[in-house]
Length: 440
Ligand SMILES: *Cc1c(COP(=O)(O)O)cnc(C)c1O
Ligand SMILES: [Zn+2]
Image (cartoon, rainbow, N blue to C red):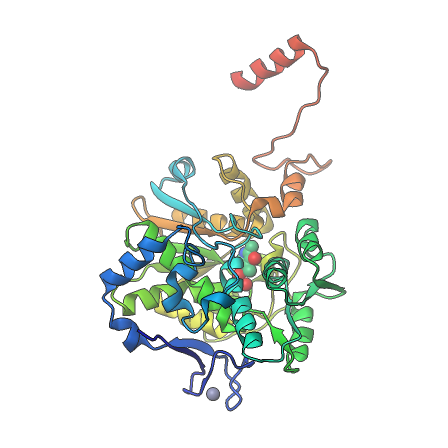
């Protein structure tokens, strides 16, 4: 069977996926990847499920990848020899049993998307984009480099995949707004790393101008090839539950490509008959970078870009999200909600959940804080199955945790503070400390 996919704007103009194009050249609208659904429907839902099961996390390259195991519905036109895969997806669904008990819910799961090659869920989409670039180059396209503006995770992912493909990468980062760990990733992978005195939105404005040149390929999520890879999150979650659909999915949002991708995966499964209902989606924003939340407050009738203020959730510190309209459309289809978390709320939520075995990044903290509010409001009830998307590995954000577990003079200690105790290497002292700790 031959499956096909192409870029398409809202008005129906079509372009090949190998074109270097991000907006429709007629109406300037964003492009989405469209699939030949009629061809895909020739295969039954059960046959798709068993095909995906057969390949899942096995060794036949590249089909063991959570993304490429679903190649036909992700990006069927890429030749296998052009695929750059690092075994994306296949991440653990952590049953948050203890944390859920504390909150009064029993079916709470954290999708650990940060357990990935570069430590964030951005790898899911980047494997598709970089593989396409390799295909374009192989088909004689003249691409000199791939490039992106980033809050730290997209750049790490792009640099890794580009260097595996042998394609030069150009990274634009807001100076001092990404962690040391995120900064060193593209440097180690040999990318040209430009640290600009601006914020993410400022980097984005420059990279969009660079993208007017045909020989630079833009890897930001305005490029919907990445969305195709990211949408496998929803498919993988449902697959991990033997094809049962959860009640709620909570996801942190910044540039808002991912909330749209999450929706897309569910919609595609519904259309192919693999599922028969949709979950509800909650998008979680940092209060200091909340343009979607503000729009939600107006019933999505208005949207205003804002200047994002500094937040610990740096990967979602975005005031002018490029996928705003896609995200609103998605939330409307999924009876979705938007909520926000303050700096204290996101840090406390992350730290509280850490005490039950997790090690959360600040963005996951935003999602967990929103989870707590939704339970308090009884929007989520005891037996709802809830999935929280953990978007990055906590190890990429050590200062977030170090600063939390640190006593600062003249400020009240944080609720879940834990500090190391320094003491003499003396057996009795050590035992006394242990007893004191366990007796509390
Ligand atoms: C990219 C990113 C997000 C937000 O995804 P968007 O598509 O920009 O909304 C959240 N958390 C982390 C860790 C990210 O890297
Ligand atoms: Zn158009």
